[in-house]
Amino acid sequence: MEKRKIWFKGAIVLVDQAKVNILSPTAQFGINVFEGIRFYWNNDHQQLYVFRLSEHLDRLLESCKLIGINCPYSFKQIESFLFDTIHENQYREDIAVRMTIFIDGEGSWSSVEPVEMFIAPIKKQRTNPENIKGLSACVSTWERISDNCFPPRIKAGANYINGRYGQLEAKRNGYDLPIFLGRSGKVAEGAGACLFMVRRGVLITPTLTSSVLESITRATLLDLAEKLGFKIFEREIDRTELYLADEVFLCGSAAEITPIISLDRIAIGTGLPGEITISLLRQYLEAVCNTGGLYSHWTVPVYR
Image 1 (cartoon, rainbow, N blue to C red):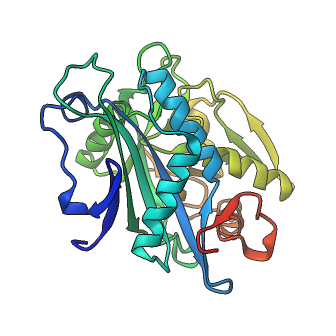
Image 2 (spheres, helix red, strand yellow):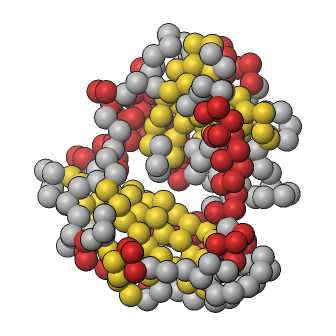
């Protein structure tokens, strides 16, 4: 870890050399936007692939626009800095990259400059579908943030405090993680992950206007599920539907696909990860690794 190199304020440095002003708006108020991007090692190709890079960088710049950060870097510059950082570390394994644009200096919650960025990779293994156990969840007493207060489509650091409240509550009460309801009382998402359920053979997920992130993983799974021939609906979901579901899972760049096997101590389906969940996970892992070349439009090789 101490030899890990990151991109920080225009240079590649050792991680312990990266310093942020303790009085900065990002330190005091969480004024930053970020992306978590996954890279997957394909041993047959001897290649590291980054998954859906364009979509992640587009969303990063959209988040800057919405939160009022004037990003000084272009799409191409950020892409170049990212690849330089990976090359410097010479990874030959699965990794995750945290890319954050933030307000540094000494300022207040309304400051708009100076704008800085860091790009920090770290080793992170993929989910193993042969050894997946599933997690327990509860419906949180905390309400999910909404577009008129803390827009969830912005990947802002401050937004994730909402997930923190729910996560800590869930842990105190003996669960692995929370599921949030939105202002309308309908199901929204987990803490940093979107939600799908399977009921009577149909794959269902809340709409993008249900207080959820415009998740790249969610969009990927909708595409994969269609190719696999599943019937799909994007609609509002009632809390009680989750209790009656055959399968429930969360998804995201970090979570990949995480089965939920009980909710409020009520077993979901058989109480084990379901067949559709596992089949989607297998297909997802093939996509992110560019196995068979079917998903080369979603993956970019790092070493050329």
